[in-house]
Image (cartoon, rainbow, N blue to C red):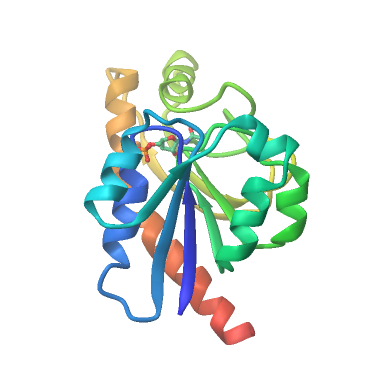
Length: 193
Ligand code: GAR
């Protein structure tokens, strides 16, 4: 059984999509959702889908080893950041090499880095009059949005698109591709282990 732990800070539509995608699979399971935001909608979504969900504070994440120890005890095969906004501490990255991935709503290296999340990214795409944007799924390293790229998918941006229009296109790409990319990564882990 491959075990997935998801980190999310907000709405959690990607977390929900991933949980549903793997729901009826015997060999893969989302075992836990973790959030830094006790009011995040992702907690409700996880509860409805009967997945264990917990919130933690910055102290538990960066100062003490509480989150690290929780993860160690969960034995995850993959840790997925799905709209998670805090920088991952080095001690957790070092403990799980090649096992932490993030989804970013732009074609990295464009529009990455601190403060570049959600609608801020789409605002930048519209402000720069870009004609295309997309999603990037990448490994997590110590710098925001800089780890090795695993997958990208593009969509077009028309001059009349608002940031909200772009967000809707990105949402569609994320819903379609993210679970499939995760599935492929886990299959490759099986064949290379
Ligand atoms: C997603 O679009 C994800 O790509 C983005 O936050 C959104 C979370 O939506 N992540 C970032 O911007 C990270 N820099 P969700 O909570 O509904 O899954």
